[in-house]
Image (tube, rainbow, N blue to C red; front, side, top):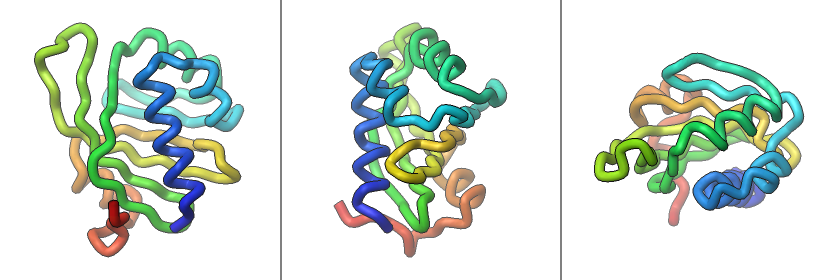
Length: 125
């Protein structure tokens, strides 16, 4: 596990949650892959579009990391339904202090299975 990878993912969350799109883009690779329940896309323009229209905030909870992969369990809230939150998990691939891919999963178990991470990769807070 790299402290740098964790810091990158936490900074990515901060930028998303504060609507700081320019910082979000700076923390992401030019060809970032973005995926979730509505499909997948690629590139900084797609990330910009998603970040400005999704209306989502993701508050990090437990984190798991190994060899450039960081899975974050999150409390998600949407601007369209602010009183309703859910627990989701997102898998990040980080390389050279940039997020290369980000895939949101419906739950932690699915995200861990998709990345071959386990409870052994839990990051101490």
